[in-house]
Length: 319
Image (cartoon, rainbow, N blue to C red):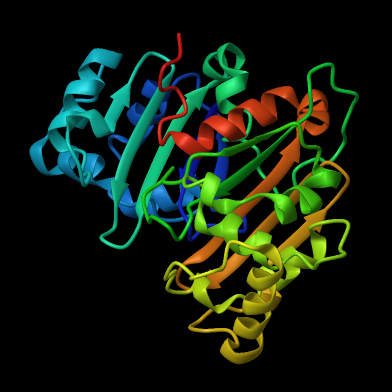
């Protein structure tokens, strides 16, 4: 048996998450194993590969108050609600027999962490496959899709909102990723008021004759507004928007503490993935643009990525 730990944090790597595997039979067993440890913070760091905001508080409380180790999931739930430090209400601590999901913040950004056993992963691959994916880049293999083409644009931990899952995915029906550049050029953004700023900037940075989005994504890496994310005033007509965006690049440079050379960008026929560096203290933000051909080859990964973008708790609405 394995318990998976995931820390959803912008400070942790190009995917803004840290994934660890723990040799415990259950979530309860992991907490019981750490309960008597004399150095809670060091133990948590050693087990989970670094600090996890507020997690050591339950073990500190166990020592300070002489709390007996929990004998059941129900007892652990009561102890967590009483003694685990989180920024938020009771619903920010969610425990069942196979998983613990916790949301908090460090006064700068939202954070979340998860403990999941093998049974949870086996039961919910369409919710959890991306959560436990460990490394950049995602696999790029695609397959013939039986469904009508759709391209999905996923912007994780967007600057539009510092909340986890602050920017729902955008669905572009009738479009394959190789055709996205042309589609965005001809689209009227006034008809899509819900499009996030990232998609509007990407559209503006697509050249008038460019067949794909790879060059535009590279230009996005130099877009100065992504540091403070003031919504740009971009004309609706694509040619005017593109000329305006190029002037911004020429005049604005790179603002703040971003290092474009620390970003990662990979574009294949049916998947574009971009981990944009936003500062040494703030890590990366992730953009994924993929179509139904990629989703056909990676169904669980695609569905879980779409869910991950809109929910801090990957098991929201499951069962």
